[in-house]
Length: 145
Image (cartoon, rainbow, N blue to C red):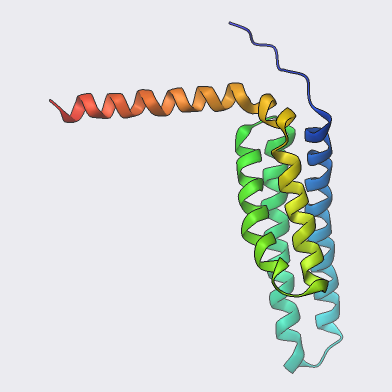
């Protein structure tokens, strides 16, 4: 059995740094929202607090998934793809100012699905598929008894 990892494609290396910057940016923007909330009247502050909390949540999720990507786990690629699509597409429909951030998230998703990245994660994908197939067969045999 070959246990050596394939060489890391440059697009996946770029994706790692792209998503790291995304997580740090979300946390930095959250800090800006919290600071802005403190300088606003109480009637306006609630929106800033809510946006800041949402950005902290997004930053924490993206940071955790990026850590998985740095470790070379397929779960990091899949989770970041879902985060990018679920957050990026709605932001694209909110106008130019917010749409730019949505487009940047979708660029990160594209970096995760280049041919080099797909080849890098192919062994993990095949292994996961084989495990799921074996589990389904085990369940079928248990149900037929």
